[in-house]
Length: 157
Image 1 (cartoon, one colour):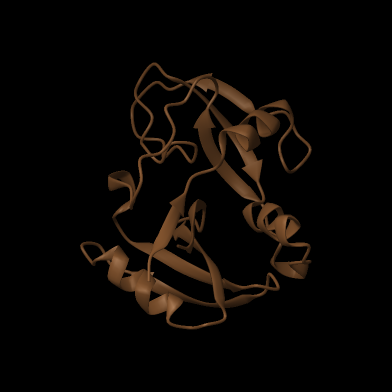
Image 2 (image 1 turned 45 degrees about the horizontal axis):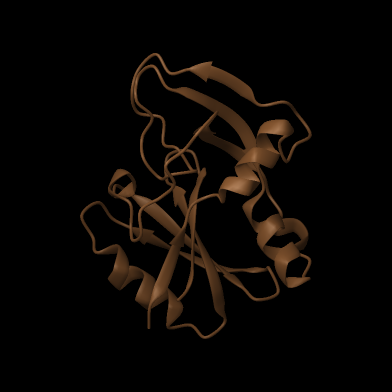
């Protein structure tokens, strides 16, 4: 069974740059140093790139596509995206997101099922296969351990 790694869609990024999911204007700036994890292409920002910091509600958008209400699990948080043109994400697990992640699974009704820690160096594909062994798991959010920030979504393939 396969799965699909999904960055924030380019059309969604354009919407968020006009006004984020918290109803605020994004903070656009030039990166002084490399390293901010971009959620639009799943790479790290380079020094000198124009990036935006904004609020994003990933489960809200996923649930709206399916006509379900995520209820209290509809959280929003900070993400970095390119403030202009973006090359988009390459297929597969992104190199920039390999260290210490939490895989948070959600059911088709938008409610949380649980989480699984992904250790540094562990095979993410094997971990995702394990999470998706639960037939109720419809989508997985990959999140940072240190801040809990959303990095990207993984759907059943």
